[in-house]
Image 1: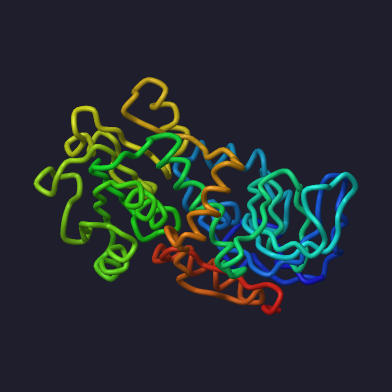
Image 2: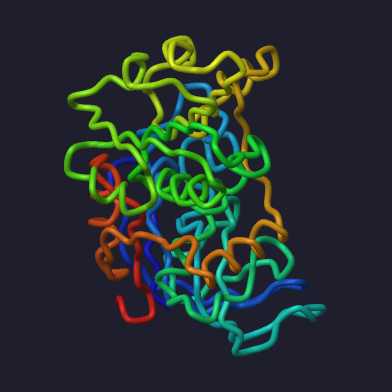
Length: 326
């Protein structure tokens, strides 16, 4: 089969197409014919470690995925496709099922076929979703729901600030917080102001002209910071209400450590949840959330997809089409 692989860390130029063997599903796994994957910041970080929150986070990730060279040469955390074969013991799916899911450890989505655990982060695709839309759901929407519902419990009437409101995770946070009844202010660049309004933000600040850490623009009950290497909690305290909380959505080990000693700081890594994914399925079918797909690239242009992701100008999701993208 065709797959985009990388044998060393570096710029998008390390990505290239190779012929590799079709994987065979082990017990408890399914073999998926991949229709779509994505170029997330997570994939880009694993490739080049260019936007990790801090050096400690970067080196700890390398210990897992390969200190000097990649242990898993095929990237692609998110996938959507069709099951073509079942491993022994699989009862939750059938051959022909359209599925989507995420596996941030095994990866493998940048290929014609991938094996995924039947009981680990794999779900039946929403009926009304295209494969491209389904591939763009698990990471961004899953992270957003984890922070908005599980960690912060956003309530109607709360004033919420979303920094990085046009990005992969941020645009879902805007949609979900608005759907939960919050008064949402989004922060983005000038070219994305109307886009962020379309996601449900009541107010939008252009960060090139307005400093969202200054109280003249308002104060908030919850701040979702989805942009790494931006102002810290100390600077955002000026615009937090007395009982307000700061969510370091893009934070690293520094913010996780701080959250252990300061209840106003919330950080963490989203946990795989069937309940949350079922809720996302229902929210999509109801039209409450919708993935914004900024650009779509064929598998043969994965290098360009990563180059665009690295640019820092990506809005929403960048999708890689596989079955028709060779």
